[in-house]
Length: 77
Image 1 (cartoon, one colour):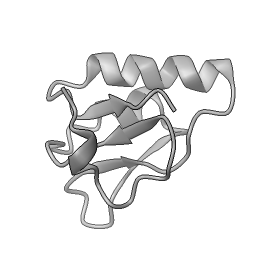
Image 2 (spheres, rainbow, N blue to C red; image 1 turned 45 degrees about the vertical axis):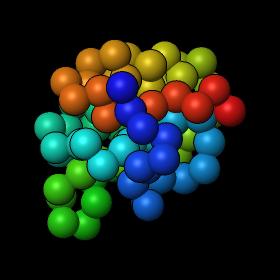
Image 3 (cartoon, rainbow, N blue to C red; image 1 turned 90 degrees about the vertical axis):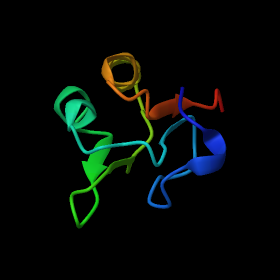
Image 4 (cartoon, helix red, strand yellow; image 1 turned 30 degrees about the horizontal axis):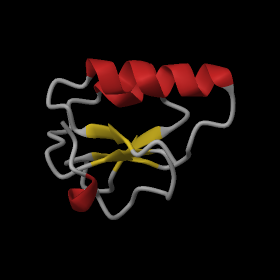
């Protein structure tokens, strides 16, 4: 389960986030490319845009469910 106290600093504020357990597998980027990106060193992902419509929301939920390290969290904000 993702730790809201250990969020990657690049995450934009909002409901979804990636924490420091991310190992750069890129599942989230494949599933929700409109909302997740890799950092400049490509060693972890982060949320660069919170979902703005139902399609993006579902993609972010799918990315969270598919994350092998459970590094994606949902604050419910």
